[in-house]
Length: 244
Image (cartoon, helix red, strand yellow):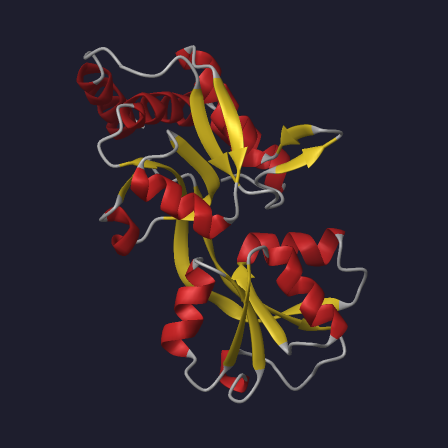
């Protein structure tokens, strides 16, 4: 806790330089990635949405969401067409070369989904010669491309499309971020699908910004304050049912 406090003080000093920003920030967001961001009764909600909106309110920022598919979000960040993005974005060394990240706030990984009656696929070792659905531009896409050369990949712009392909039997499995896979199975899978294998590729999510964004320090200051005063833990437990 003392180390976190000292880090917070250091960031406050770094942020003493005025933050230059547009009157209204543009924040890229995917159409849905439950439970991190989704629309309910026409309003955005979810863990990352509430986290971002708390940070924005404390910093007095006005903003608007710009909905894009995931690969479009990455491109928009790399070209500076948006001010920030909340999209369950995994921090990778490759992405750090073209964009900036906030401090990590969620530990994730990758998980396989198959039909509930499929006992043939128990792990990624069983995917040779099989059809695997992934989401374009995500770490699941990258992992499958690099690690599963004998698997036929089918790419979709949204994870929900990949899941429906599994349920219909048009593909053998889908690979995507663990929390989203498990949330879908529990809330929308209707008993048709299940998770198999172990959690792959330890990952961390963060908010993302174009390189050298002046927003990053201010976001980190507020985020660390929330972690220190308990608001982050309260938000995390409300959405995930357990302490961070």
